[in-house]
Length: 340
Image (tube, rainbow, N blue to C red):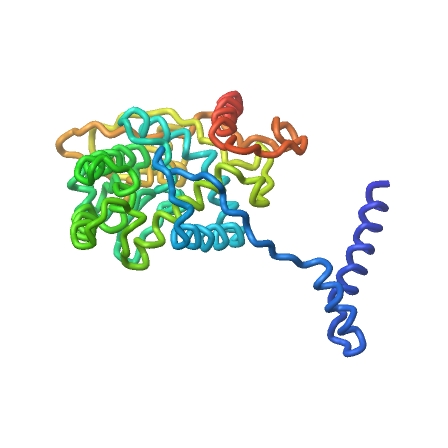
């Protein structure tokens, strides 16, 4: 019975495609254009009435601020594939990043900087900035991250987030206790922002005229925050199970030289691939450790399997509600640990 239904649906689908793409014939041009205009729509987006970053109000009555936000909202809403993937990754990484920000007294909104900088992937920029927080090597070392040929803690989510917190707190103090300026300085540098504030004789980020990259930086940050907090409002339909789940791990301590990580993987009943994926800060297939420093290496929890969509609590069609990304991620943690 199912095979007959699928066959019927296939025929209907094929006929529909043939109808839609029959525009190559001259006498079907009118029908094609009518079909196109009836079925393809791009909508202008409503600008939020109230918006803030870290509790600091965004002056949306300023035409320049408003139109820059409109630009970044439009780009990120209509770059659907990229934005959808970023929203999915929030389910895995925000539950790790959020507690670190909170513990350090950094506002929760700063998690969107990591999302804006890297899309929550370990990308390497043309200037060789690395990881979720896009630290340059020298900056990373200045904030106590180990960066060498074998170990690069810019790829360690927890440690790099701790380093980013130190930067934000320092910038906040040096820039008049203003979180928006601290966030902008992550792109332009503390000195660069201070120089422009003095030169232009203003105190607010929104009153500054800056280079195009920094000019767009906060607007992009605000747009991504708005979309992730309100996915349905902007047309992003996700079930709870569509968010990437946090990966349950256990920690082993390595305090000696490891000549081959494959051996370490076999001893712990995992694979070299999994060790490298879960510990991207390990940059080689070996680890030299003559000083017997203690390193914590993540190992995949035995028995972990990816949650089955058919059994997932969100597979009944329930959608991610406004502002629900974080709570859904925490629920996903509980689901995945049960699979051990």
